[in-house]
Length: 184
Image (cartoon, rainbow, N blue to C red; front, side, top):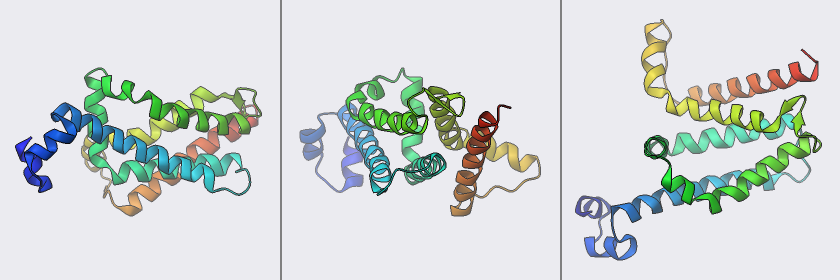
């Protein structure tokens, strides 16, 4: 706690007053980032004056979520650690996460005309596929940063990389939905 207080430029007693211990501080950090994510996603869903098209909703969610995780690289590692430890703190954030999951699910249901499917894909699978591709961009970074260069490709994780990643995820999701709509 002393090292944290020193890095923050505050008195250790003040840190203890607000957070009690490292566990309290850890929970506060996770909660703060999750609240920020929910706020960003909510802002995206609220900004449209008219209902968004299926493609605009998917593309916008992928972009916003990718940008949030790009801007909070330490959070990705915290989530990995949290999941490896059983996800206790993430589970305790349900009251923060649940309303946004309901909003996103509602947007997908509206796109799927309440049928539970969007162009033949069950909405839970669409959400899992989308989240897997976004989070995988960050979770798998240590692995693909070694594999891709060894295969002869260059990989520079900069703004262009993340922009390309957003386009790639959106292209895959939209192509999948178009194939579903065409009955393939």
